[in-house]
Image 1 (cartoon, helix red, strand yellow):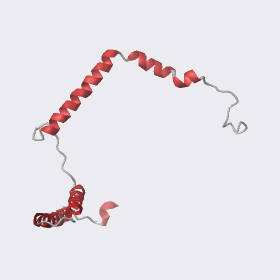
Image 2: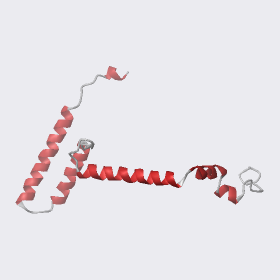
Image 3: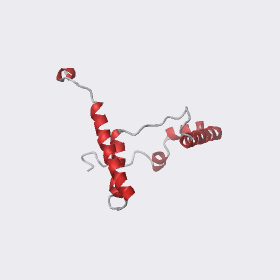
Image 4: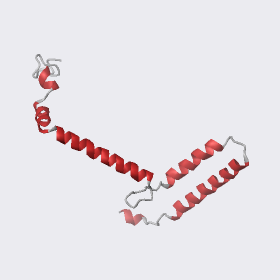
Length: 122
């Protein structure tokens, strides 16, 4: 391995310089306790704002992401699998609603497609 250059006969760097490179020392000297405190406080404020946003979803400042068609159909499929073995009139009604929801969602997705021509891609 020494002939190919993969294995060196002597280390070029000491263990100390490998574990504590000079560039890392410079960054640590520039960071003060106040910088760390400010970063932690900012993170806490952001987390609190996010929790408030999640608790009060009707707030104007909150962005509520609507699930995609795929996510909605996956959730409906999961519910169908869960209630599939139950024998209850309400469950049978729910299964019918889930099937209807799936069909309507597929139809909406199909209707939202736009016609294209092959020449549009060249």
